[in-house]
Every structure is written in C-alpha cells, then in structure tokens.
Length: 424
Ligand code: GLU
Image (cartoon, rainbow, N blue to C red):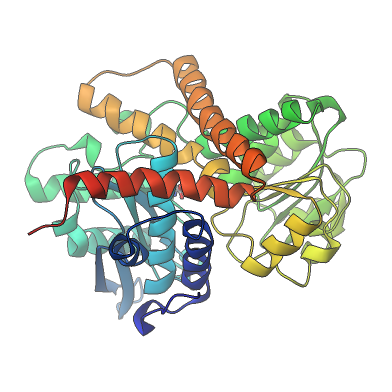
C-alpha cells in the first residue's frame, strides 16, 4: 500500500524514496510502529539565508538541513546547491544516506543539506557569503559528533573549507572533523575527491567479473561529467574500458571507437568548454539519445529522475550503475527489471564518497593521516562487500538488487532502533 506523504515533503524524489522503502519493507516483518518512524526525517531545519550580492542588494535564499536517522551515530551527508532544492528533495536524499551508510557498515545516520540557488550564477564572493551564512544558520545541528556535512551537487572542496572555517570561528578553534571533502591542507583526505567515481568503478569491475566480462571488452556511456562522472570516466579509461559517450548540462559527446578521456579532461581544465563544443574529440549527441545508445554499462551520474518510463523501454545497456542519487524512477525500475537489465542502486554504487568521508573523519579524529593506497584498498573492500552481499541476496531471493540492498540497510537500522528502544 502506498504511504501517506505529509504535504511539506511531497515532491517526486521524496515519493520515490518512500515508494522504494515500501517495496523493500514488504519483504520484512518489521514492527509497524517502527516503519512510520523510518519514513519521515527525525529532524528538519528550514532557514532563510540573506546574502549581500555584489551589486549591493540583499537576496534571501531558502536552505535546509535534514537529519533522517540518529540511531546509529552522528548523521552524515552532503550539501547541495541547485535551483530545484526543496525540503522534500533534501529529506529524500537524507533517507537514502541512512540506508547507504548502514549498508556499508559506517557508524552514521543519514543527513542532507541544500540551498535553492544556481551556483553558476553567483560570484565566488557571493558563494562564500551564502555558505557562511547558511552554516551559521544551521550551526546548532552541526558538530563532529552530531552531523558532518560533505560536498554534493553544486558544492566542492572550497565550499567545505568555508564550512570548516565558519564552524571553527563560532567555537574559537580549528575543528577539522566537522566536515569532509575538505582541501588537504585543513584535514582533507587523500583520495576523497575521486572517491565516488572510484567506488563506481570498483562496483563496475565486480559486476563485470561476476558476469564473466572484462574491462577490455566493455563499452560505457556516462551521463554527467561532474565530480562523479569525470573521475569514473578517467579511471574506467585507465582500466581499459571504452567510454563511447559522455554528457554535461550542455549536451553530449560521442565516439563509437572510444573517447579520449584524458584529452577531454585536459581540455576542460584549460578552457572550461561545454562538452558538445569539443568537436575535435567526438561528435555532439543529444542527451536523450545518449541514454539509449547500445553499450554494456550505462552510468547515470547527474541528477535524479533521469531514467523514466519513457526512455526505459529503449535503454540498450546490460548493466545500469547508478552514480547519481535517485536517477531511476519507480516505473523505470520495473521496466528494466522485466527487461533483465541489472540495476546496481545508488546506495551501493555511489557509496564511495561517503566511505572515504568516513576515512577522512576518522583520520581527523585520530590526528593521523593514511596513505592513498590504503584508502583505495579499504574503499574497495567495503564497497565490494556491500555489493556482494546485496547481489547474493538479490539472486537467492529473485529480487531486484535495489530491494535487496534496501532490505539489508533497513534491517541494520531497525536493529539499532529495537535495541535502543523508544524514548521516553
Ligand atoms: N554527497 C555524497 C553522497 O550523496 C557524499 C556524502 C558524504 O560524504 O557525507 O553520498
């Protein structure tokens, strides 16, 4: 039965997260009292953020920080800057973080933050003032033992440096472990920036191995060339896969013989040119056509709601690996399952980011830093274990992998609630 959704959360990504949750718990005999508690966030804060713009005006932005579940430890999750950010979207993404961290065995609950803003339209000074005031407004929720933000869509290491500084200014000393995804010079971790993309590759490698394919005979299409898509493309290319199409928010670039990913990355670093303008390196392709190209691996690594009931019947990949959060709608999921396309869900495939965030937080707390090779191998071990556990469960119970992964994550959280009991 579909859940009732309170109007303040009602939004497509929230409806999707709750529908996925409902599908998973249908296979579990959970206490109904607990089910209700897990659907809605434990805490949600909405703030107004006045920012002095470069022209002297004061513009007011809407921001949120949502902590979905505090039963297993401090909460963890990124901060998103995007015009479509709403309380409902942030709450859905916080819920996904709860299952993601539980599945990977990290001692965190899920959180997410966001500001409804197009960061591409703000100057660096405006972005800094926006970030500092947003963090000052949500300050009571934050802390190394309370809630630890990280980058997400539209934010990066510089944003996290402002977060760290603003928090530290309030308490009067430098607090490194209050935020992850920071620059190295203030307690960032080696390997964090590429971690989500690297985790996507670790999962892809496992999928290929399980189905007796190799990187060398694999074609890949990637939607999104931001932090996740560009690192995934680079590492897959290094490992011998053929990336035949990629896209950014301006459009796509296609080469059936394989794109020269290092040349594209070098060009973008130098010029910041939109991908479809790099015609010396590939042919421009419409984003809709990119998703339906024949390939072995399709990686949506942009925003949510990209794989829908309209394009799912036309998708021609064998494996769909979700680099983004919530890229596949419920209807599309059912179509892909019927068509025997294996979907590796976001809560496994993109967990590399939060796994290495956990390493960063642990290093900062220990006042000790780990070597990069150690970080890569620990990441690979944790993400591969989460993947194998969900795959085994999916195959033995004949369930979609998303349902199997959610079951494992939800069970973990339910156990924590059960043994802590209900306060008061
Ligand atoms: N924003 C990333 C995610 O969605 C990383 C979160 C984190 O490192 O806390 O998983």
